[in-house]
Length: 216
Image (cartoon, rainbow, N blue to C red; front, side, top):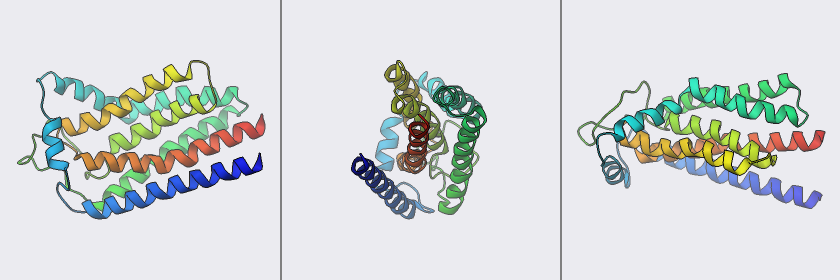
């Protein structure tokens, strides 16, 4: 049993390290830069489609904002942890800390990389923005929030966890398309958001599962 736990820990640590190295390499590549690699080609392809897609993209992007992410994550994760033996205040604090680290971390990473938003002369800009481009904050925050909710349900084997996880992951995956379609992010910004989110989710879900099983 200990050997299995040790192997799992090593695998998780290795996965975290790979994501960290990949994120660092990508951040260096896009720092203060415009489109890199296939960014421009993919962005132009993803911006094609009928006009009504813009409304859909706006809705998807709204689902990736804090007024939605915070209550949804808390409503899913806190009750699950409470049923598994966590004290309510610790479950609430756990979610609060994870989200706070995510929101603060993404802002700091954006400032450090300082990548400009897509040039409207290269792609059509269909929405506004308030910060630098890399990583995509909507993708990062959505992946952490919905990923934490879905991962908690699956890892702790809640009833109908699979169906719930699929429902939660739909808005997560849609963020990649929506932010590129609206012309406010390059595809590599979304990749950066996914990698950064993995750095949060791997230890977070590991802690949630470990504490729950320890107290069982």
